[in-house]
Figure 1 (cartoon, rainbow, N blue to C red):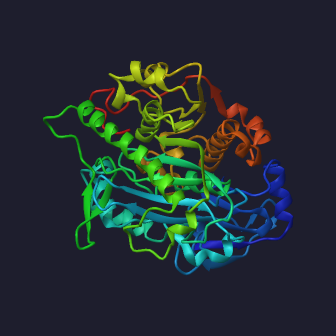
Figure 2: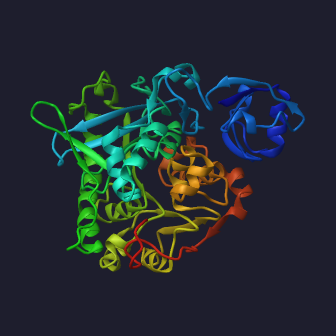
Figure 3: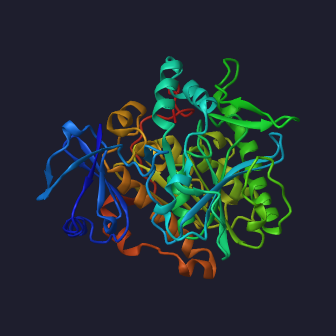
Length: 466
C-alpha cells in the first residue's frame, strides 16, 4: 500500500521557505526512505511514493493521516504520472502519422489547448505506455541477458503511467512557435514527455518524432489493410562496426527531422490526413503554427541529430542539444560543426560527457554555440525514466543521480526556455525565462565544456550503453 497525505495550508509556508522562488511546481524530496512528491502548493496535497509502513507519521511539525490510495493517483485509470508541466497552458496531445510507410512521419504532438484546468481532466490524460512491442525492443538493448524478466517488470510498472497532457484536447485559438524533438537511442515518442509537455505548456507546438531507422526501441508502419507492422530496435550486427550503423542511422534521422518540419508546415496549411484512427481533427491546427522560428531539439542520439539537422536545414532557426552523443558523426564533425550557424545551446549531464565526446563537441561553431553542464546529473536526468522507476529502479537502470531528479529536470527545462526565448523574436517576450530561478541554481551549473564521464558507447571499446 502507498499513501496519500492530506495536509493543512500551513504546509505551503513550509514549502515556500524551502523553495522561495517557486509558485507552482512538482518537487521530489528525500525523507528517510520515502520520496515526497509535492503537487502545486495551492492544492495542499502531497504524495508519498513508498510503503505506508515506512512513511513517517509527522513531518515538519505537520501531523500526517494515511489514506489507502496509490501514489500520485489522480483517477481510477492511472496509478502514476510524470511531473506536471508548469507553464500557463494546459497541454493537449495526439499521435499523427503522415504516410503509411517508413518514409512517412510518426510523431506525438504536444500543444497548448483551450482547456483551463488540467486536474479536472485526469481521466483523459495521455497513456505513457505504448505497448509490449516497445518493451521487447527496449529489453534487447537495456537487458539483453534477461529480456523476459525485464519485459514483465517493465510492462507491470508502466501500464498505469500517465503523461499530464489531455489526449485530443481542443487546440488553442492562438498561434505559437514549433519545436521538433528527436529521441535518443532505444527510446520512443513518449519517453521525453516531461520535457515536451513543459515546453508545450509555455506556448509551443512540440513534435516528438519517432524514428524509423531502428534506433528507437520500436516503431511501426501500416500495411494496406491498416494493420500495424512493427520494427524493433536493431542491435549492431557482428559483421558491422558501431560507427557504420550509427552513421547510417543519423542520416535517416536527419531526413526524418526535416520531414517533421515539412509535416508541421502542411498541418498549418490544412493539407494532410492522419493515417491513424483518431477523433482529433487536424484542421484545428490550420493557421495556428508559427513557423517563423522553428526550433530543433533532441537528447543523446537525438542531440547529435539536432546538431546535424541544423547544419543541413536552415529553416530551423534555433537549436538545443541535450547531452549530444557525438560518436555517430565523429568522422564528419569537422565539416558539420562549423555549418551550425544558428544559435545552439548544448545542455549536458556531468556523468555522461567523456573526453572524446567533449573534444568532438568542441568542434562546433564557437561563435553560435553555448555549453552548459548540470552538476550531479546522469544521462537519464533529461528523460522521464527517473520519475517512473523509484529509488531502487533508478539504481538498477543507471538513472540514480546526486542531484534530485526534479531539480535536474527543472534546471534543464528552464535553461531551454530561457535560451529559446532569446532567439525567437517577439514570440519570446511572452515566455517565462526563469531568470531568478536560474540565478539561484548557479552552483548546480558549469559553463563551458565539462564532464566526468569515463567511457561511452562507440568511443570506448567494450562499452555497451549510452
